[in-house]
Length: 58
Image (cartoon, rainbow, N blue to C red; front, side):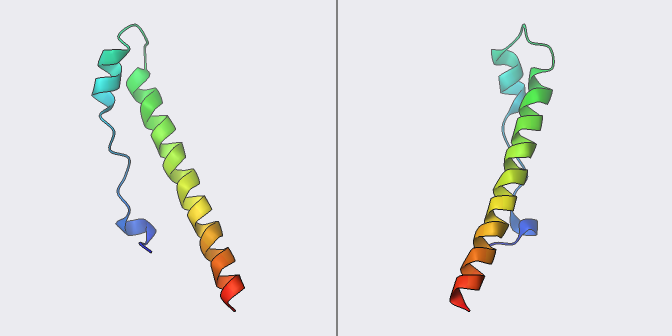
């Protein structure tokens, strides 16, 4: 299992999203926020799963 420090930060091409949604102001910023929250939730769930695995192996 990799540590949080080894996990890459969100790497989506936000400029591509902005180009796909030219009429949507702040599209790139919105994509960045969604990615950041998704990464945060993924880390939280990983920690919970690791805790469950630890407690079940004890």
